[in-house]
Image 1 (cartoon, one colour):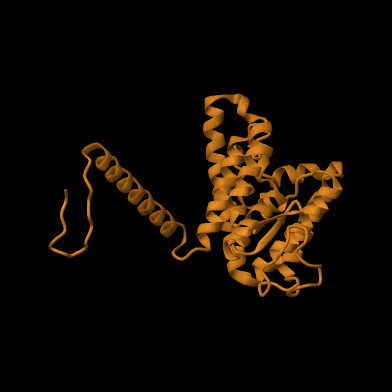
Image 2 (cartoon, helix red, strand yellow):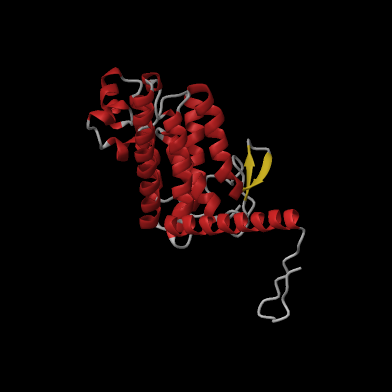
Length: 262
C-alpha cells in the first residue's frame, strides 16, 4: 500500500519491500553498515575495533569520536531479531527519508544521536561519581540499531502522527503515541533489568530532540511552548483553589466594563 496517501501502516504490516517510494541509497548504506558491524562481532580480531567505535566507558579516556560512531555499530544479538530490526529500519527509514530529504534526514539523525550520547555520558559520569556499581552495562539502551530505530520511529511519529501502526503486528495504535511507547519500552526492557540510568536518559533525550527538531521553531520553541502551557495550568489551578477557598466566581468578560467579581 502507498504512503502517505493511505495512513494505514503497520509495524510489521507496512506494505511490502517494493511498495511506496524507491529505497533511498543513503538508507541502504546505513543498513549495510549496521549489517557489517553486526557480522564483525563474530570475528575475534574485529572486536577491538568495534569496542573503539561503540559508546562505552572508554569515552572517559578521551575516545570522543564514540559520540558520533556509536549508532553505526550494531549490537550483537540473535540473527532473527537483528534482521527484524533491519526490516523495521527500512520500513520507517524509507518514509522518513523521503519526507525530510537527504540533508534534513542526516541533520535530525546526527543532532538526536549525538545530543542523546552527550547527555547520557554526563549522567553516567555523575552516576559513577556517586557509586562505581553503575559501571556495569552502561549505555546499553542506546547502542547501535537501537538508537537508529528510536530516532526513525520518533521521526515517523512526529511527521505522520495520524498514521496507524500495528504494535506487535496486531494492536493498531496512532503513530504519535510511539513517542511515549519508546520511552516505556526503554524503561521496561533496559532500565529495570540492567539499571541503565544513562541509557534510559539518553532514550528520553533522543526522542525529545527528534520530535522538537521537526517542530516549527525547533527545541527552543518547543520548550518555550511547554513552559507557557505549564504556567497557564498552574495559574488555572491557583484560581480554582481561590474559588473554592473564598467561594467566589471570577467572570471574564473581556473589555466589558460590567465585568465584576462577586
